[in-house]
Length: 279
Image (cartoon, rainbow, N blue to C red; front, side, top):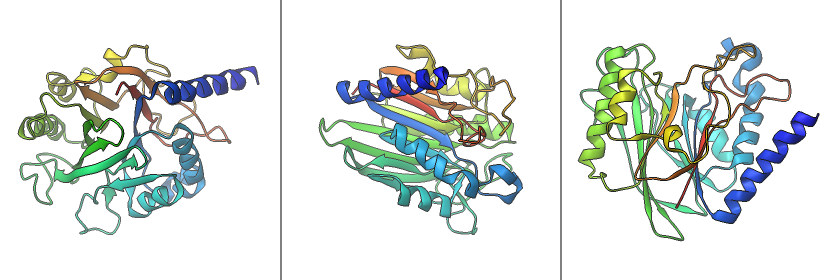
C-alpha cells in the first residue's frame, strides 16, 4: 500500500508540474493490435485501461502503433479533446490494416499539414520496402501551438520487425525526409516502435541528425530500462525498442511508463514512452 501511495504521489506531482510550467508532453505507445490469440491480454479485456492510461497522462501528442481501424476509432471516441491524423498502412486495401496515428490535444494545438508515406523505395505509394515482411508507413504532422504560435514537426513510425535492411533504409528515409522538408532548424520529433535496440545501425543513423531524448533529458530516465514486455509480467525489462528522438528541443524528463492493469497484467506488450519538453 505504501508503494502505491508513493507512485500516486509522484504521478500527481508530475502532472502538477506540467500545469505550472506549461511544458508540452509527447507519448509514443504501441497499443498492440486486436487479436484473439492474446487471450487474457486481448484488446477487449484491456481497452478501457488503455483509455484510462491515456486520459491520466493526457499527453499533448500521442503516437500509436499497431492500432487497427476500430481501435483507432475507439480511442478517439473515449478520450477528451483529441483528434487524430493518419491512414491505414495498406491505404484501404486490407480490412484489418494498422495505423501509426498521431492524436493531438485540439485545445492546445492545431493541425497545419499532414502526410503519410511508405517506408520503401517508393514512399508515395502503397508498397513493401526492401526485405520487410509487411508494408510500413510513417505518419507526419505539422502542428501550431495555439498560444505561442510556434510549430512542431512530428514523425510517427513503426519499423519492420523482420527486415534488417528495411529498418536501416527506413531510418535513412526519415533522415532524408527531414532534409527534404527543410527542418534542420525546426523543432522535430521522431517517435515510434523502431524494432531496434540502441546499439543497432538504424538508431545510429537517426542519431547523426537527431538526439535520443533519454540521453539529453534534464532528469534521468524514470522507469525500467526497456520498453518491450511481451505481456510477460515476470520479464526483466531491459529491451528498449520504442523511442522518442528530438531535434532542436530541450527535453525536461523521459519516462518509460510501467503502470499495470488492475489484475496486474500489462496494459500492452510495449510500455508507453512519455517525454516532457520545454516550449
